[in-house]
Image (cartoon, rainbow, N blue to C red):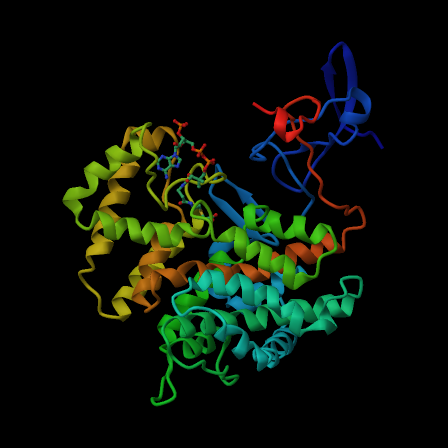
Length: 430
Ligand code: CMC
């Protein structure tokens, strides 16, 4: 069998590097032998040209606006499936049969409660703590409560940890919310489906009956599907890197939650809504567009642009429809934020700066408006993203652990600090 190679010449030295083809998408040049043969590293700080792993989970074509989970287009999954089906697909590689789906739903449902001692753990936080701070800590703390699923070399323990993470993350997210608003925690109600149960834990109170609205529940379920995985983004790469050292899955997912928090990543939905609120009215949009285009102003239009999508974000299209569905179900006709959002989108899509730089609205542009209409405060937006992305992180972590070629991730660097120099005793320093 012939192996494709690429030829690289550095300092008069020519080497052949293997080229590997994926099923679809760009091929990669395998540069693992580079250092051995040339004494040189590659340099790509933002990983803009670097594939960090082989994966069979999610495929994105940023130019065409394509997102596939295990080969299935996101549009079809969002239209026809439910979130737990997507979880099964991401974790096991195939859509479940009816019997498999029933069994999986049951297994997840059985693990929705968290250790009772977690309540006390929550009590240590200030009430005004950001729910993401609480989530990072409580997810990490799961490893202190579930010792029987932290041995990563045991496939059965890996499986249980995966189910536990998918099942318990809505409970922890709802607890973070309840704690921040001073209401009692609500135990999971396993007669409800996954997303209705989450709405119930978030919005019910012991003194009143709460019946989740199926339209809103379906909309939120779809939002979860849209956020479930996105190949090697910053938080997923963080989970993989943390996991590459052999750390337990709960610790790895906590690392992913921490990374997701940043405004350039999962924190963008919160930032996008704050920006819409700050703009406030349609007539103020031009001054914000000008700020976004000003090189000397750090302001960016939150919810616009993407490292990979340079045509449109397919999730944003579905999200836009979902936003309208939710607003119409809730009878919200004139939402000033939506007016600002639609006008901002219209202007940005026709403005030369945004067109030329291929800055399209991403999923976070619309998700904030929808989550607000559903009754969540802005501080919960990234928590909801984390809830949905947990299955993607777990699937990627599992794939990495089960990959026989897996080794600890250990990037190198271009050192630009001092060369070796001698220690100067304190009294002799000027
Ligand atoms: N507003 C104004 N200008 C922008 C924006 C924006 N939102 N995004 C990028 N640019 C400009 C940027 O200034 C740069 O201009 P120049 O070439 O003149 O220096 C050019 O576009 C390329 O930007 P970049 O920062 O090199 O692109 P990147 O691929 O490193 O960044 C991004 C991608 C998503 C971090 C960035 O577009 C951004 O900060 N967007 C706003 C935050 C946001 O919405 N993030 C959510 C991403 S989707 C959800 C997720 O995956 O977590």
